[in-house]
Image (cartoon, rainbow, N blue to C red; front, side, top):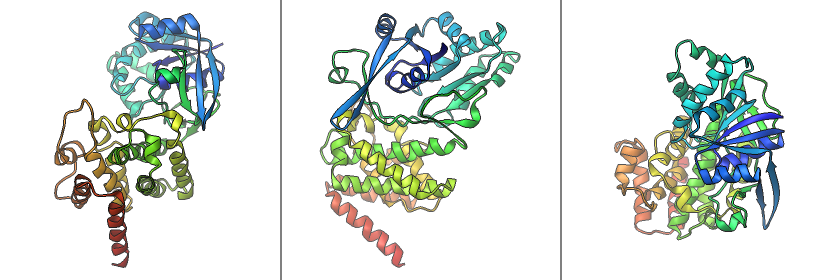
Length: 398
């Protein structure tokens, strides 16, 4: 049986990548540092993935699994050396801790007779995750060992499946159960593989892969976060009930369509295809069973409003492609009044200048602050929508 090493036994690792690997015939070893999780994986040797749809669900039992202690360098590097395929889903801030085990495993692999290339599918929300991880590993190697990296594929992936924080109700009596949405396509960078592309159902090899990375970040993630910001403003706690408010849906859809139009122009992809993706995402946001919260989706302002991330990155993309940004500006304005538990409070001006990197001299900065003033004054979203539409109509007449 083929062997896979899945670095990270969390929601995406078990609820998405591990499931796909198992269904493709791999025995999957999950590397994690959570001892309770590892004990359960090694004792039960299987876990259920519950696929939510409407008011019902399907369930898949993922078998042929095991757990490896991430602190056991010898065990992890040995598994990597023998693996047919590896993947990571540990989070951007943890990815650096995988570098040494990968370095040791790669060196062991190619110095003990294994001549087969090794591909690592990197499932992190990070533009340039391939070069980032490769650089971390390379820094730990000697000049001679770096030659082995020519046989290693650092394959970026775009994670579209939404997996919420697992509540006790979702676990439904089984501590390893993961509840997920039905969507299960995994776009990957076709050009990055060094071995044969694995025969995994719903794997979508594509090149240039920057298209999928940006589509996920600037359409999906941006729309998701915008829903959270506007939904909280309307007094809602969950994503599904936020997107159910017509005014919220209108602003979110228009912001996503602006980004989709910019993507269409940049990559010469039919706008109709991207707009169908927008419509599908809106439908997926409304999945009540996922139970995702505005607090989770909208948190971590220093990342989500940074210059290259979902909100400001989408804004910059639209500006570069000469696409109107009014609806995006409104969503960003909503984010400035978003309540973030456990995060240091910052003024709107500080967020836009120090976090987002905008200049107070920019027209966009002033537009966002104008919209923010409407949020601060507790104006209804219908009034905000009216202002934007009047502005757009005026621009057309001019």
